[in-house]
Length: 441
Image: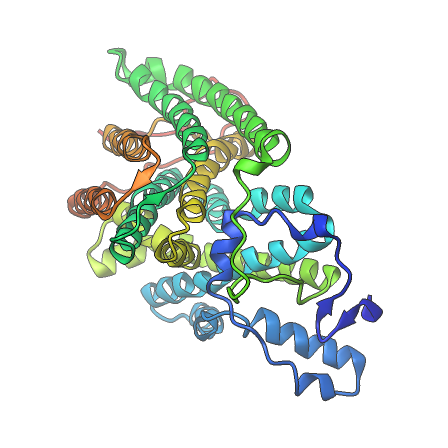
C-alpha cells in the first residue's frame, strides 16, 4: 500500500471510484481544511511518517479540531468524579467533531470500495452517533430518552437544518431563482409519511378507548410489526438510491475552483478502517457518559430531559453536518442541502427508530412506537409543512423562515413541558405476555 501513496494521496483511482459523491459527503467536506504535509514528508521513518500524516489528516484536517480537547477532559471529569453536568456538557461538545470525522472516514473508505459499498457504509454510519446513544440508553432501560433523542433528530433535520438552509440561501441569493430537483424531495416525503403512519398507529390504538392493561401488549406487537415494515421500506430505499435510481441522489459536482470538495483520498484503506473503529469506540464512551448524566444535567440546569434530548442533543451531535448544509445553501446548491436534511430524517425514521425497537426486542426490553400525543403531533405537522414547502421545486427565504419558526415554537413547547421521571422498565423473560413498564398516571 505504501507504494501507492505519495504525500498521503492514492494515485490512479478509476473514474468509477471518484464519482457519485452523496449530499452527506459534500456537506461534511465544507468543514474540512487542506493539510500541509511538507514537514511530515521529510521524516525518514516510513511508519512514523504515515502515522503523522494520518494524525494530520484525521485530527487536524477539520475546522472543528479545536473541540477535540473536550474528549479527554470529559474522560478525566468522569474518572475523577467531577460534577456530572460537566461530564455531560464536555461529552456533548466532544461528539461534535467525532460525528464529522466519521463522515470523513466513510468517504475516504468509499474511494477504495466504490460508490455502491461506500453508499451502504454511509447509509449505515451516517447517523452512528444517534444510534450509539440510543443503544446505550436502551441498555439502561431509558426508553423515553431514546424516543426523545430520535424524535429530536428528525425534527432538527426537517425544521432547523432545512429551514436555516432555505432561509440563508434565500437571503444570499435574493436576485436568483432558487430551484431544486423535487424528485428526490418527493421520494423522501413519501417515505417520511410512511414512517409517520407507523408511528401514529400505536398511539391511535392506545387511544382507542380500552385500558392500558388491555392495549399494552397488542401495541407492542403492532410496533414490532411496523418496525419490520419500516426496515423493509428502508432496504427498498437503499436499492432505489444506490442501484436503480442512483442519479437522483448523486450530489452535483462542484466547480473546478471549489476547493472544499476532496478529489482523492488522503489516507489508506486500512488506516481509514482503523480510525473508523477507534472513532466509533470513543463515540461509545461519550454516549455512555451522556446517558448516565443527562438526568443530573437536567436537574442542575433546571431544563427538562425532553428539551435536552429533543433540542440540545441533535443540534450538537449533528452540528458539522448541519453547518455544511447551510454552506451549500449559500452557494445556491439546494439539492445538497435537501439531500442532507431529508436524507438524515428519512434514515432516522425508517432505519434507526425501527432498529432500536428490534434491538430492544432482542434485549428483552419492551420498547414500542407509542410516542405520546405531543411528540407524534409535532412530527406529523413537521412532515406535512415540509412536504408542502417543497412541492413546487422552488425556494425562497420565507419558506425557510416559516420552518425555523415551527422549530422555535416546538422547542418552546418542550422547554415548558416538565416531563415526569422515566418509568421503571424491567427486562422480560423472553415472552411478549408480561407487561414490564409501570406507566405513570
